[in-house]
Length: 206
Image (cartoon, rainbow, N blue to C red; front, side, top):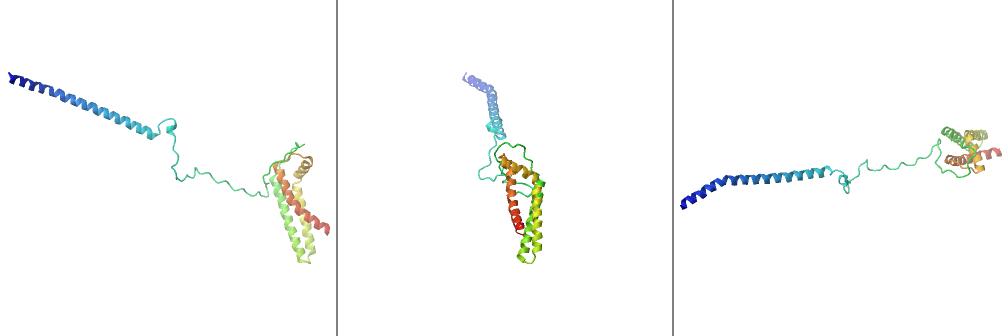
């Protein structure tokens, strides 16, 4: 009797063994799927972070690391040096306040400025030539001719600027407001007048 019960339990154990192994395999398979799913989620998160993370502040590009040398594109260009105005232009000046002009100021042409400057330079060379002749002595004729020629060149200089100086004189007497270019023209005329006065003074003493 006992032998039959033992045999029955052994038979039951053998019958249940495949089910147990099947359950074990099923449980192991579920665990593998769960781990694989977790790894997939982690991989997606890593890719999302590396790609910049979508909208918002997370996608902002980080600045260069400390101590890094800025590139040429990010470095501001140095300011260009201020150039010296040429004979064909006037240095920038602030406009002069005053009454509303009775008529508009003529725009000063660069060609007229250049022509006037050329006459002035010629007059200056003739003046220097005359002074050299005077210092050498015995060449009074050359001295006289040089001074006269210098005077003629200065008259051409003023004539080239006549339409502008006419407006300037009227504006100065009437207290009109002046554009900045006329304020600059006044400074240039002051330089021309110095040489012209010396030439005229010599001519009066002849």
